[in-house]
Length: 286
Image (cartoon, rainbow, N blue to C red; front, top):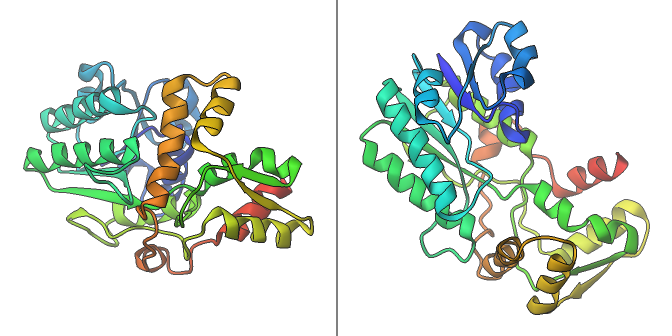
């Protein structure tokens, strides 16, 4: 039995779909906050159980019988994030899970300038301390984040963002396929994987060139001072911690934390991962 948390989310849902191509549905279970959103999976023979990171007892029930548990990282930051992960890891131990796999991130480190990477590092420490077999999937930085940063530029033609550095932007679809391959035991990793990245690390100067080539329209790259960027984010209604979190992505990129490019993802999926150009074309065509 393979249990996946967050199975109605952007990454978790894709992983379950790829997993069902590899193993019978009766070997797959999902732990979700709202089982109604996973009714179609239940109809296909997947075990659906309610599980909330804020209700540890529900997680023990949701994880029951799992040979492998995929813990999809929470969309939270700081201690709220780590505490949720701790609750899930403790529940996995109580449920007798055989192996825990966790969606970590390239650049996970206690001294990262990006809060999420510090959270991932703390979570990996918790996994290490269980004594159970574990795997941390060091996912490349999600390309969807770059596409969100580009949303206003899509209309204005000006990529106005803080100073940055090269980032190995990586697609959800490729990461989901690789994760399913690992869960289906086509490959195995002990502890952190190598970075699971797209084929190139790009800064937003290069992204501007790609956007120009893709659309046939001119795109410029304007470096916005950090304070001005933060004010813009707050003016759009985001709380201050979100403004700080977004800024920290650029600080970490400048610090070279997301520059690694590795062949492991290509080896797992049997082809080159999608380029950022391909992902931009696809997203903007929609």
